[in-house]
Length: 180
Image (cartoon, rainbow, N blue to C red):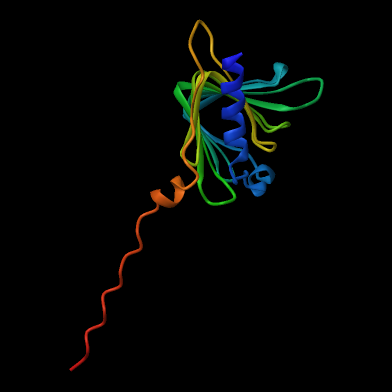
């Protein structure tokens, strides 16, 4: 029961942050660059060998290998990035970054969901959630974190004034010297 309360607290903390994904990102094309690729046209699958970088607007995923395929029944595209770790980053509407890392990152484009599996970490505005698996709906900003084998989900929540304290102080402008 305490673990469920911790997960709920972490989810509420991240969801209540005043940052949302850039709407423009989700409307952009997905670009994949890799060292090589293999296509299995019959099974609607392409395997990209790395290093691999996927971009969609400000969204960036980096991995050692990427499997991209389409579901037959609803046509939704799925990207599965594998790495040690694979990483995800995105600039939010407020200009601040959100990032994630795991051994496997599953990105379902149709429902804008990230599933992080294996040493999963999600960070946003200084707050962090870690666990064995994290599911995060980018559009709805809903998060579910789980662990297994006696491990725990860890949530770090920064104080409300954390972002203000982290910004570098404004540089003082040197006074202009009088011209002679």
